[in-house]
Image (cartoon, rainbow, N blue to C red; front, side, top):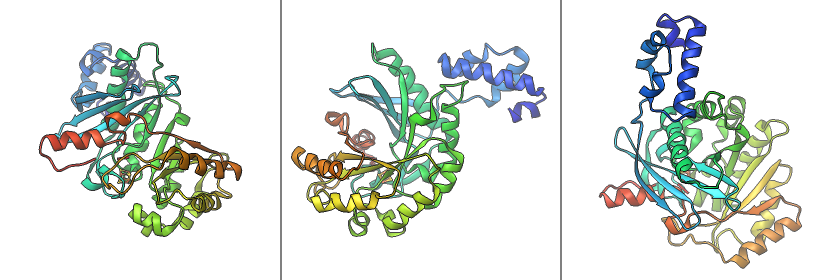
Length: 349
Ligand code: SF4
């Protein structure tokens, strides 16, 4: 709107032009030019050069799993490949979109395809919002009796805290009344624990924070997640306690790897780490990733681990990854696609 005002429109004219265009583009799904036809001609003339580009993302591939999970592959304007996943959950009662925040990732977690690629570049606000816009349009054509997409998780390719400005701005767009009006409480930003960004995240963004913990001590966490060498788990907990706003809780995600972090003693260490932290815990049996030694435990081991935590009073659920038959880990489709084309890129769990 500032640019429109600088182009000579009065503040109310600028506001109305943007509102009409955004509603037509995001809510009614018109393309940029068609949406412009709803704006009065004088304002449209000024607005046209500022429009989002409809070719921000081009759909490249779609794979549908038995459980109706849809893995969507997009090509960016500079011919890079990113991925989003539409995930119907709770017997189709709730639908979540997993989005990417970066092309590649610089965090190099051992269990993650994206980590092997390294960071290529951050995604722009337009590219993050476009994942929702296009997935939403696609889902509305095929969803049948299932509900519209209501939840968003930043768990695709990339570490959101490493692209915080664009992630925060994209969430502001997705939650705006003129676009999709999503509830910020239904948006989760998942991080490996970039503790120095926690204060800024909570100050600027009302969305939920999810922490990918995955090990109950520093030795094993550092082996899985290099970020731990800089921020050990005691410091991570201290940072959460220092910055988590009053009344908010953090979702802690713990991927279970057979023989690595799934022993009863590990459940006890995890319970001790969680003590005093306003947190909910999700246990996630591992999906096959790039390291053949990192595999899911048996259902019995998962249940024993969960029960030990439940008995100790921890709020804990087991979440099985969706879309396992089409490469359950977010980012794996993108990796497979690039391999087919002879590229070396890989892709996020
Ligand atoms: S798990 Fe997330 S932070 Fe770690 S390498 Fe993969 S994309 Fe990056």
